[in-house]
Length: 209
Image (cartoon, rainbow, N blue to C red; front, side):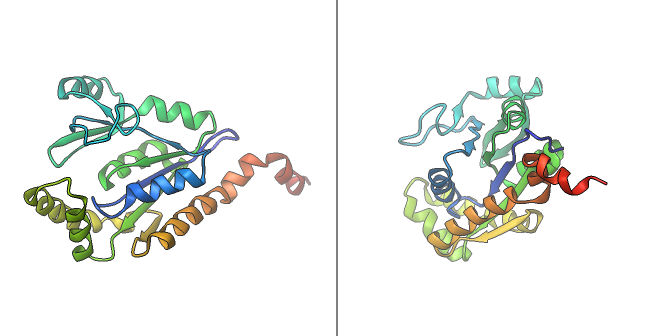
């Protein structure tokens, strides 16, 4: 439940290759007050990735230990690797009034919604087509053919859950999609519940007998 000091959790989901990471990077550059949640993963770092910046890279034993201790608000196994989001960090940041951006898959988004309810805004990024998605994945040159085929197969199932999000953005044109994502953030901040919390004294003027 929102309180006067509560922040908003923006959960952004998309199939691999839909452009989610690029859009989030542009959003954070445009909105420096937003904070990015750093997930834990057992996936090996890719070239240029730093521990604590892109992910908290951990081995499977440590991940399982944290999971069993209830340390993750959501976790999932994706493409053979584990991913999880710190429950404590999210709660502390939101209670302090920070707005948080979290990049996770649709399964994780469902788990987060169960935990944070109205404090969460779900956003799903769609590619223009599976053909465009395949071209983007191939163009990254980070995965082999078998991995790309596996990601495309997974994408079909993932995109069926887009309607479960509060907002859906089609990333056909990056500039347009970026503007739409920023508009969603602004719209969420202007929701009555948020304004009532942030401008409580003003609203009380109209609620007096």
